[in-house]
Structure formats: C-alpha cells, structure tokens
Length: 307
Image 1: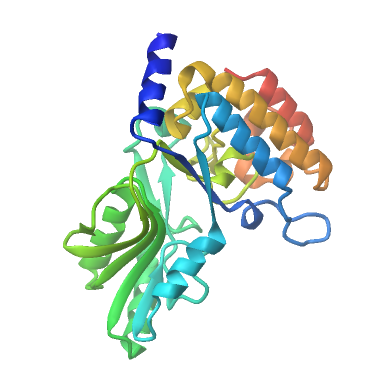
Image 2: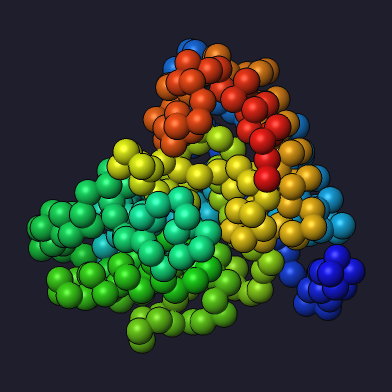
C-alpha cells in the first residue's frame, strides 16, 4: 500500500506540477505575548513548517502566500463606486461591511467522519442572519452601485454557496466575487463573475494557523461535550493530518510529531508560559488534562499520545 501512495504522489507532483499552498497568517492569529503586542513570527518556524511538509511528500511542493500579497491584489482591483463585503477580516483594509462567517461542526467526530454535519455561523457563534439588518441598512445609505464579495479563496463551493443563498434570500444582490486563490477552476458561480489572483490545481490549501495549537479562527471548529466552542489543530492526530491536511497517510504520524516540536519551540522561546485554561479554544483538552498544565507540557503529552 505504501508503494502505491508513493507512486500516486509522484504522479501528482511531477505530472500535474501541483503545489501545497499555505496562507501566511500566523502573526494575526497567535495569542498575545507578555507585552500585549502581536508576535512577529521567526522565519525559523516557517522554514520548519515548509521542510516538514516537503519531507512528508518527498518533494519541494510547498508555496507560501503572504497576506500582504492578498491585500495588494484586492487594493489594486478596488474601485471607489464598489460596495465591498468581506468574508475574512484580515484580507481587506477597509471594507464597507465585514460579513463574519465560519463553519461550526456539531462535534469533533463530524470533522473527520461526517463533514456535511455543520452550520455556517458568525465568528462570535451567533446566527449568521443577525448581521443582515445592519448590512442592508448600510447598503441602503451607500451611494455605491456595485456590490463585490471578497474572500481569501475558494477550495470547495460549500461555504460560499451557503452564504450566497442567505444573501439572495435577503435581497442582497452580489455583482462580482473576488478571491485571491481559486482552486475550483471556475470563472463564475450562480452566474456571478469570479475574479481571482490565482486559479489552478493544488494538492491542498490551508491557513498556517491550522498547524498550531492555541491560534484563533481554525477551520475545524466544533462544540465539545459541554457545548463550548473549540478548534481542532490539524496536527492533533495522524488521522486529521491525513484527512484534512492531505498529508500522506504513511507519513502523517511523523509529520504530527515533528510539527508538535515546532509548536513547542514557538511557545518555549517566545511567549509567556500559557496554561491550558488560558486558551478557551482548547477547552476540549480539559476533559483529558488538568486545566493548570502549562501548554508546553501539554504539547509533549499530546505528542506522546499521538495516534
């Protein structure tokens, strides 16, 4: 079986020349340090992440996309008569409206085994529709006559389709969609034009934050057994690394082990001594560990218990 996956990877990487794209966003998603300043990520950390992914595939396939490049793209395309609705609060400097949205899974098992079992909610976990009266009010007062929806990228249609349907039901007409990364190969959706910075194939596209414990706004968010909001890091098990981060199954456990060491380096060298109880988005781990455990020690235990 291992030789089959090696052959498959060779064909994907060499025939189709596909890349593994990572959006560079760790600075804006890490916990605050002791001086209450946003942490500047050491390039050593990024090099380790790149090397670890490349080694998992046996090829140099990783491509980083810095957020400032995405911002430049949107700024170059911007027009004063456009009403901008942003789905990602980090990609557009001054949108007319930030439409907060994220996937919320029913439980941790759904992320791996029932990926359609989710709802689209605001990032504050309130119903998505609660934003609509304010959006429509601002649009009514605006003199701008073209409505543009912007996001960092399209990988699958699920989330975008859900949001477009909600907007349509509430008589919010979108004239154009702009994304930095378009891995769907389509130039339109529901007869709405899509303008892309990059369009093509990829092995995977993931935000950098998803490989680190404790960061904000992970893709894999869910309710734990006490109905608290949690995020599941893509390195917390070999199964999630393989299924959700597309790391080759035969290398996924080694990948997780190495990336946990990178996490440990980050917390040991730079930040204050966080405890598990300090990071509410990891509260699902309080069902396993003492809430008083320091995060570095927790990471060592997570590495030891990897499956």
